[in-house]
Image (cartoon, rainbow, N blue to C red; front, top):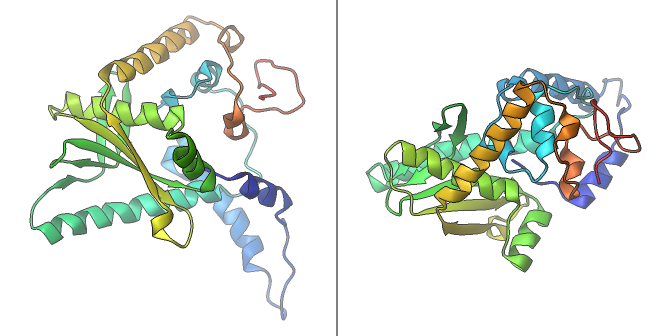
Length: 257
């Protein structure tokens, strides 16, 4: 998952949708914008239906219900630029992990792995440090997430639950998990702006998230309405694909916070 700053949001709202030709050459930015929107739409992750660990920690149970119901989502109006950057960083960090192992002459790190978190839940974990029996997840973030960690010592519920679900996945593989760690890689020119958050692995937290998901899924499988599932508005409503500002809550969406 990625983090956008408020400044990024306002800049996005002001972003031009057209760029003029220069010296008789049509704008590459204009064409690239449409290509990136289509590119994101065809990515396997964008097309997946099953929910994964990155989605189960949202405080809003109704968002989970809407995703399970495959609720309508408006077509993308702009490139998913922050997620695009995050994917690029994750891919490069996998190469870094392999280099790190080669540098040490041993397999200290287990690189990206597909984990079975529960019977019906899988996820792709970034790394596992065998020396310290710690699950590590990379996050490519802006100043908002970094400031929250520095000022409050906290990370978002989505991030926290995701980390412990990966811990559960490694545990089911027979690995001992002592701790989970989020490495917040700064989306800036300076690596030293980055931070990290760590806490002991909490199996109960992971199992509670799985049980909550199963209860919501059972409700939806039984023909229940998304409107029967509690909505929890928060600042994260900005990123909800079912957010419909200024409209009443119905089967199609919610106005959010």
